[in-house]
Amino acid sequence: MYQIFLELRVILLVLKCEIALMFFKMIIEHGMTMKILGLFFYVLITIFSEQVFAGEKDVYEFTWLDPDKEVYVLQNRKFKKSNMFHLNAGFGITTSGAFVDSTSMQARAGYFFTEDWGFELLYSKNSGEENDTAKSIRSTSAISSGQTPFRRIVQSYYGVMGLWSPFYTKINTFNKIAYMDWIFGLGYGNLTEKNNKFAFDSNAFNRTKVSEESHGGLLWTAAMKFYLNEHWSIRGDFTGVYYGATEPVLNKKQNINHYDATLSLGFGF
Image (cartoon, rainbow, N blue to C red; front, side, top):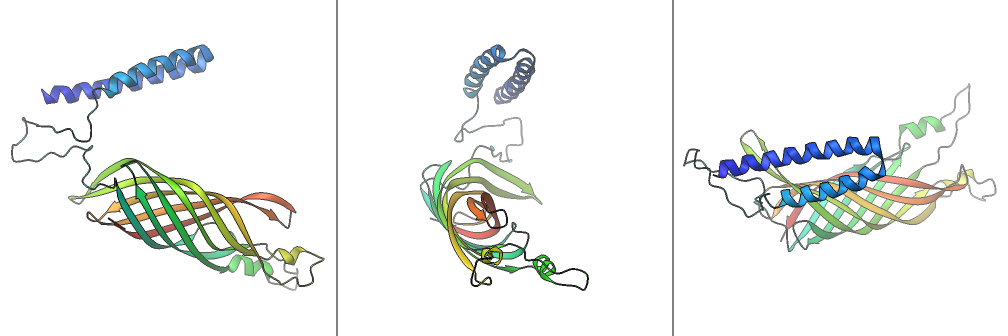
């Protein structure tokens, strides 16, 4: 009976995909009228199919298998994060900035209200210096004189994000099961950086002076959280800060992206 039920679920899912593809083709050919009709049928199919999808707490008895075998359903979570706090500390590198090599030390603290939704506070302490590319541009030769590259060195940033964790994954490798959450965050942050904009100001009294600036901007992250046990985990994050600042070379405000890739150790309680 359960085998028939599972087969019906697969058939319904395939049928749903086929109908969605068919309406997508018709939308391209016939325009707005088919968009409305396609949306109507898609909603009907979704409502119908959701009624037969298994929930996280559903249990299956596969009687045709060896009774000594245990079967775990993908929906069931071994590690929960609902109504739990988490703390993370980690280290990483900055992947943006053509003229700077930089590292990042990050601390995170957050809370999940449900398995899908939560929030997080983030603080990142960055340190960097000009790389070989910048030094080569500055260097002079008998043929041509060196130039001054404009660079920003991020010192730190902090912020708060809402978290969404829609996917829970089990990975089987070498007869070991790894449990993983996908986490996405979006919020607001404040970034502090130093730059050499006075080097491009002909009216500046001291053209070697370093300018320190602070910017507010969009803070986001995409993460993979691997569970070690009920409390401990390892998390990889790709974090970005999107902000606006004035470029002295062009003398106008531009949008800038700062990216950090980090690996951290986490504790949940």
